[in-house]
Amino acid sequence: MDQKAGSITIMQRLACTMIGSALFVVCCLVGLLLTDALSPGRFPPMLAFYAASGAGLSLILGLVMLERRGVPHGGGLAAFEGR
Image: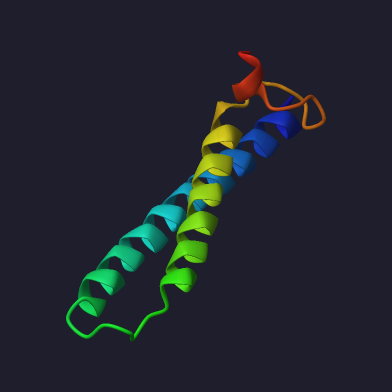
């Protein structure tokens, strides 16, 4: 029982880290693109697109990991199954 609680805690910490890092990347991108408006061409827009896409994916995966309610790791995505 204690082993399961430890793995859930680790998964929640990992999920919160993923969510926090995704929000940090998005905030940094917004700041960088706002400063890029003052001197255009410094930052390639496609790089910003890929970074924002990766941050969005990290945010979604972190939220899905937090929504897993006692489902074994091989049991599918509990957030999308309504469990």
